[in-house]
Image 1 (cartoon, rainbow, N blue to C red):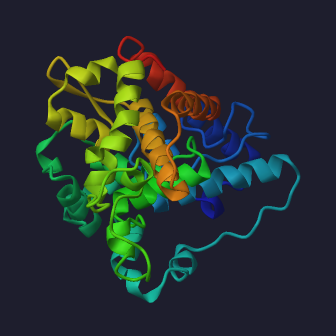
Image 2: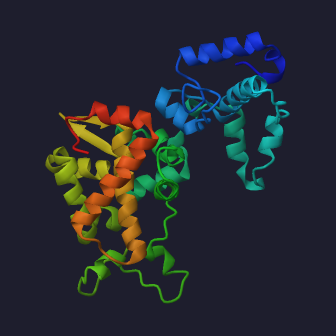
Amino acid sequence: MVYRNANLKSRVCCYVLLKNYVATGIYLAGNQDFERGGPKSLETLNIEFNLNFSLVTYMRVHESLQFFVSKLRGIEPAPGVSLEFFMRTFTKGSKPFRNILSHSEIKNLNVWNLTSVKTFSQLIGVQLQQHENVNINQLISFWNYSGLGNRCREFAFKFFSNKLGLNIRVCKFVQGVDAECTLCAAGLEPAPRNAESFLHLFFECAHAGKFRESVVQTFFPLVGDCTPLEKKLFWMCGTLSHNNQGIKNSFVTATVLTTNFMIWEMKLQKSLLPISIFKENLKFEIKKILSRSAFLREERGKIMNLCRL
């Protein structure tokens, strides 16, 4: 890897570095014109170009290219920020993560041992490690993908990290909050109502299920013929099954996350939208996502025969 201070002292060396990265498609700018482009996030870069950059590698490449852009603009490059200074910005209790960021590539980290991954697997009742079509690395970090809107990214992080404010959890800390499902109450379900657990709200709830079923019938008719387990993997992990094979596609993941996010928004608003409006809102959100990301447009093109969005 090229480090800024050691090797980027000349315009020629900068040009060679830039040319090599443009030639291989691994350029950090948002478009072909590096002077107008913005940097891609680490997660976006890894997903779009099938890379495995650690945070350290990403920081060094970004620093090198930023130095080059500053030189061409005639701007005095900012002083380099040492990795040690960056790591000190983390809190005292994050030593394991500091070690990961400092020394490890993603492939060397056994994500199945992370508490959040184990909890997510337990919540949905599926041993995800047994399913090769589930890319857990991508799922737990998909919230950082810049193609999603900010509120959806926040939801995605909480969704896969078990940090959503579900009633079954909130009622233990906030007086006056019932454990019952908000959407069941909004749908005038007679008492006693089911508790609002993670699996209930995002897979079992009959009222939320009407929206999910409508999305499947309209946009993913193939999922309607899947087994209950395949449907669960679709709604929890964004995995599409076809001809007994799992299809990992970032556009499907983004669509499923957006659908679940919109169901979560109805829960927060304590009201149920008409299904027709829900689907129109979903199409509008997907259109915005596609406008932000050429990569997701390419991913959609790979499954045009399986998706009607």
